[in-house]
Image 1 (cartoon, rainbow, N blue to C red):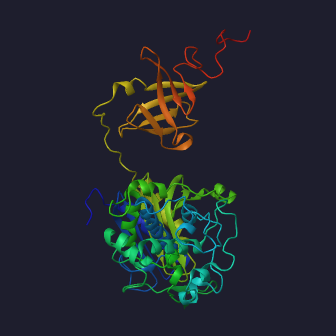
Image 2: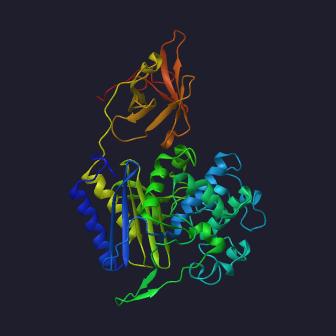
Length: 461
C-alpha cells in the first residue's frame, strides 16, 4: 500500500493508462504491462491485454532479454569492489584462451571489446543453447571484428564472456551467483532463468494480419548472461530503485553511479540521437532529460527499464510480442508523464551545521582570465564552481581533508583545486589543474601565466 504522499494524482494515473493503452493497441501486443517507481517505491501498475478477463498483474513473468546484461554487470562490479579483478585487466588474465582475451573487463561491459554482435551459426535466440556448449562455439573462429577499445559495437557474446568470468572467479554457475548475490538480497523472488507460473507466453504477430504464431522459449545455455532472465514489473521496479540508491548487501551507490557513466565512444549517429553506453547500462537523452537503464528483446518478448535519476522516477514496460510497440519509447514517456505532471518537491533548504572559515573565505567571484566564475559551498558538503555567464566549464568538488578539493565531473573531473596563499596567509589565487583563478580579471598581484601588461587595461582612442 502507498501512503497519500506516494500516490499519483488520478489525472496522472489516467495519462499513464492512456499511454500504455495506445502502445498495446497500435503495437498490436497480445499483452503489455507497466510499472512506475517514484523515489524508490512502486506507485503505479497498469496492464492491457487482448484476452478478456485475464489482465496480467505485477507478478506475471515476462522474458526480459538484454535487461539481463545489467544484472550480469552488477555481478562483475561486485568482483571489482571485492578486489578480485580490475576493470582495466584483460579478460585473458582470468579466462585464458578465448581469442578475445586482449579486451579488458571494462571494454566488455561497455561493448567496446571489438567482438561480433551475435554468435555464429543458427539464430541463437531461437535455438537451444546446447548447440553452443563451449565459449569457442559462442565466439567462432574470428571473434574480433573491430580494434579493441576503438568503437562501441553491441556484443551479446561479450556478455557470455563476462558470465564465464563470474563463474571462474566465483567457482559456481552464473545462475547460482546471480541468485545468491543479487536476486535473494534484493527480494527479487519472481526473477530467474526459467519461467515460473504465472508467466506470459511469447508470440509473433503477423505484420500484415491480426494473427499470432507462438515463439519457442529456448534455454540459451552459455548465452544466458546476455539475455536469459524472466521477471515481472514488480521485481524490475525494485531493481530500478536499487540501480539508483544501491544496497550495501549488493552494490554501493557509488559503483552504480560508475555504471551509469558513459564508458564507450559514441558512433556519430549516437551523438545525434543522444545515446551512450555505460558499464552494462544504456544512457539516453529523451524529452530533455537523461535516462539510464536497459532495453531487451527475445523472440516473443520486449522489455524496457528507464530511469531518470534527477526526477526520482523510473518506469518498466514488458510486452509478449517479437515486434510491435517501441517499449523503450513507452517507458521514457511514462517517466516524462510523471515527472512533468508531478515534479519532484525539493527538500527544504537548511543552512550548514558548521563551516570551515578558511573555506568560506574562498567563496564568491573568481576569474580565469576574463571568464567569470562563482565558487559556492553546498549543503551536501561539496563546493561548486560555475560560470556566471551560464556558459563554460562547471564542476562540483569534494573536500580531501587537507584543504584541497577534487573535481567530480566534466572537464575538471579528478583535477585538484587548492588555494595558494601569500606569506601573510591571505589568499593569492586558486590553482585548478594549473589554471590560475584570481579575484580580478588578470590580477596583476597574482602570478598570472604570461604576466600582465604593466600599462593595465585601456580603451581604444
